[in-house]
Image 1 (spheres, helix red, strand yellow):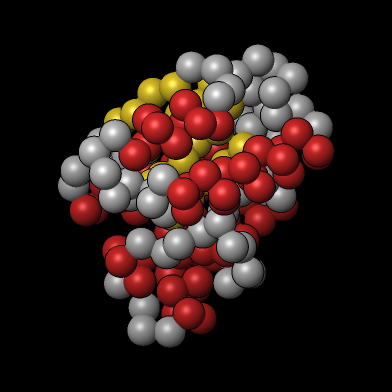
Image 2 (cartoon, helix red, strand yellow):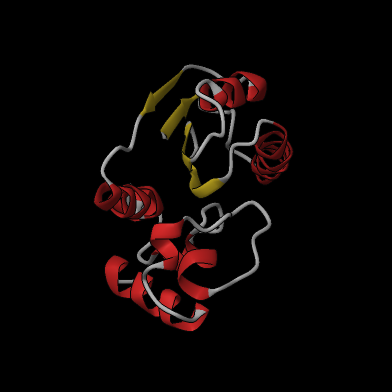
Length: 147
């Protein structure tokens, strides 16, 4: 699922707000059996790419997080999953917040493209298909995102 959670402008504005959100997201995603493959926390919204174990897992996760409205869009084509992941991680670049996705602290890009540890991110099988080694997958992801 591609989840978009919208909140008030101040919801995700400060470092403490974003850290708290990501900590809650990590806790709740495990509790709702809803692994997160990609994310970005913007100033007034969040994008998540998740694979819920249960049919209502994504919406239950966002209700538990309890901030604002949300949309849930199924990602049915396997090929679209990587496009969606790219869309999510390039959001700060498109918004003009950074020139390169690696410069944005509040996304999964550093985990997927640079191999940095991020306990929130669970790589999707289609991400694993990008290469046999972690280094190859990261390089393939950087090439796809031009990061």
